[in-house]
Structure formats: C-alpha cells, structure tokens
Length: 385
Image (tube, rainbow, N blue to C red; front, top):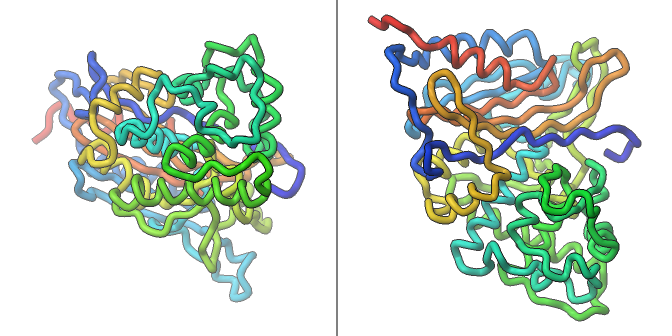
C-alpha cells in the first residue's frame, strides 16, 4: 500500500437476517422436495477452487458443527522461499480481510447500542475529538446515517481517507450534498465509526491541544480493544489485530501466476485507518464469528440486530432457489497489466438450516461468490435415498 496503485476495497454485502420480519433467528428455508447434500456441496466447492487460485481455505459448518474444512495452494509461493518449497495456505492463515471489516465495525456499533453506550439517533458530534470543528451540515448528523452510508461523505476508496487527520478535514468541509440521505458506498464513514466506537466505549475526551499523533494512537487502540473484548473473544477468536503477526506473513500474487514475487496482503499496520478495512482474520476466525452471531446469537441480541437490519447497510437479504441467504466479503488488491488480479478475497455465506460457509482466496480468477452459489444450488438432490 506504500506504492501508488489502484486499491480496490469492496464490500459485497454484509450481515443479513432473513424472513418476512427481519430477525436473528436465521434464514428461511423454502418448502421444496429436494434435500441438501453437504457432501456434494463440499466436493463441488473444492473442485471449483483447486486450480483457480494461488492458495485457498474454506469451511462449511452446519448448526455449529464443522462439516468440512479444506485448504490448498500457497500463502507464500516457492519463488519467495530460499528452500523453494513455499509455505502452504491453511485454514488458520490470517490475511487482511479488507471490507469484511465493515461487518466487524457494524457489530461493534450494535453492541454499544445494546449496552446503551450510544443510540442510533444520537448526534455523532458527541463522540468526536474536542478539537474538531464541524461543518454546519454535520452538527446534527446521526449515528444511523453514518452506519447506513447516507451521511454524504464522498471520498476515494483508498487508505489515507480513513486516517484521523483526513476525517477531521472532511467533517470540517462538509458533505457532498448530492449524496446526503442516499446510500453511497465508501470507506470513510466506517473510518469515522472507528472514532465513534473509541469514544462511545469509554475513551477520555482530551483537550483541543492534545497531541494529534497520540490521539490517533489512543483512538485506534480503544477501537481494537473494544472489538477484541466484545466481538472476537466471545466468538472464540483470540489475538486478532489490524496488522499481520505472522513470522511467515501471507503474500498476494498475480493470477494467473507465473512465478512472480508476492506483495503483503495489507500495509504493515492498518490500525490508524481501520473501520472500513484493516482487520486480519483467518477462514477459521470468520466461521467462528458468524456462527457466534447468527447460530449461537451470543454477540448481539435479536432486538438490536433487528434495528441494525432496518438501516439496510450492511444488511442485504437475497432470495435464492432454496431460501433466503446472505453473504459478506472483502477484496483487496489491484488489477495486473495482463488483465488478471493480484490480491485477496475473504467471504462468508449464510444459508438456510444454519449453514455457514467461509471462503478465503489468495488471488484467483474471480471472487468466490459465483462458484459458491453454483456449488450450493447444485447440491440439492431431488430424490435422495
């Protein structure tokens, strides 16, 4: 990320709760005679990933129990290791999950609402640094409009726009009037949520003259601490950070791959920019998280999840052939000169009958959404024996 390059941070949807009345009780299953075969789904998904990525890992869990956990390929290819053996991509390989971090940030906001530390209709000015001067249009900006990406922030999908210094400038300059009240996808509003989470969860409000670098660090640390303690640890995830802690850090490679050296899957430390991106998690971490959120319902209660769902972002419900489902994902990287892709994909999918799937890809010919849906829709047996 220190190089000047196009960075693509894409959220393809996030937590969704499916039924006529949105609820945490999981997804609706359509009445149909076909029976889902987890074994067939696993076979088809594995076949779709084997030869179309540099490395991959995925998990299929149902009702909180592992059905399949597979991995293959490399997180570091042989060209980048002295012994020419490479390092395998595994189920517990942590990579930068890019815009899937928005799901994590939204869960943290929902948890704070449940704890009555903040409200959806609260004005965000009460949870921002004392030194900030806000544009008149932001004086009464409400939390729910920041979460729903309707606040009028309209910055580039880059890293620097989410830094505290940048956020201060944007809040002083005011919104893009053509975007206010309308959904407009960007990272900046979720960078702002990093700041709001820090103050709402108990960080001291410092004077207007407080050192800017120290304030940036304090906010990042408080944001991470709250999420680690209230979102990750209850889900069984320990030690997650906004930087790689691996002594053999996963690298991202061009695909199709022709023995090129790799690049890190994120900057050395994304803590000062996190919110819309920044977290490092594994396929194992994400399946545990979504199982805790949707199956065990132990992260945030149903009432507040209903309230989050009504904001329409990051929630998105889709109706499929066999019932309602939802998915979320993040992509981080850039196109190659040959029309390929150098980057990562980190996704989860939640289907009816408490089926949770996570797919992580080290580069690849495309994000996993289409191949997962093909595998799922073709895994129903009309006349099961």
